[in-house]
Image (tube, rainbow, N blue to C red; front, side, top):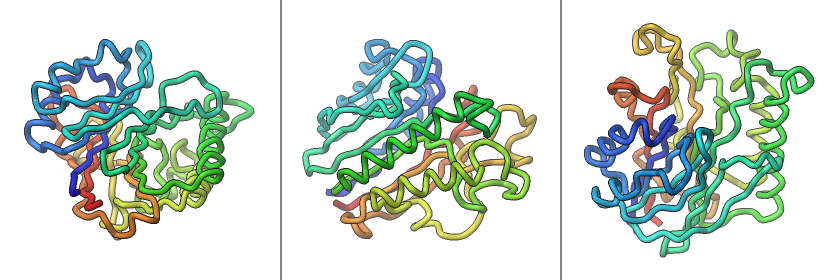
Length: 262
């Protein structure tokens, strides 16, 4: 079975319902994973998405914060969720396709502004969340699985506009990169996007603070698509839909795509 998957931090699914609809109409991925939905599940406009050919949804939500959802053309069943670091946040949901592939949709904590857990509780929560992910995957290495989402870390030097200038900025600090690497290693995950696009600067997020984000191009690759090792090379056609960052009232993230044959 071949399917195309997209992941997108939408920064409020209700506020940007029209942008989600546009993506579904124009790009038509078989599966769309959303993060930072900022909505209880019963308030997500699921009927509107179903009318566009996406009748299946698994989601976890909370009012005004966090929230993750998987919209699908393909039948998908709820495969549970995890509350890493016991934060009580809606940051993970899993769905299982009929072929047995499990899709994990994550929204890792951003971590605040100060990269010091003693001075910034949110940074400590981020590191603890990643440690929880690592331990979970180490205890049961995933098989026939795909992990996507806003992981809020740009791991490679070419995943940020300036490695040197961002070394002490949350999302690219060495300790965060190391923690994310531990998660990847524990699960045997393959970075699908960078397997398909191994060279060059690559971003999926540009700050709202930039007057002209496109010209300044001070981006970071915070959004990821990973595959379990047993899926081998069953993926291709990775891309970032940079144009979506320039849509009216956009999210500060752009959707990331990949196609799977599994």
